[in-house]
Length: 194
Image (cartoon, rainbow, N blue to C red):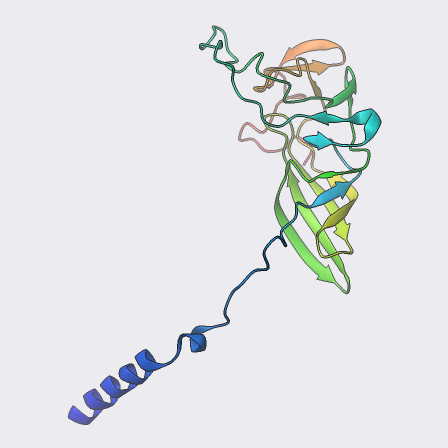
């Protein structure tokens, strides 16, 4: 009993005295090495820099004059969260060149030789949710759009300044979002396209 207790104490003492490098590899990073990924083509993005399609739909902050209007939305008039989301009423816009990958989230990426294949959760706030596939040949710095599936909502917002997306343009008719099973969002019942 004494020898096993003495052996256990000796083992703990040796482990405590081991250098920290034995615990695993040292983690470091190269300053200024992080860059935002960009995507070529595909669905609408928050920022688009191609000259004839330039827009910026980020940074929507409520104005001080919006004091909980009745009825909502609270942020109405605070910017254009869906800037250029639709080209014409009822026609969804596309990304026309290399743009920052926003709103692309939760990547699932796998390597096939020198190519990365990524699947991304595409989510413009309160508007759309879909899976987007893209490939990269430069380790994720830039991506080339390959496809979109499981789109939640194929309609344009009625008012591009409404961040809550309360109404949709369904064949030219102002329709309350979720009031009809053909335009309903993911209200817990799942995607209607599945």
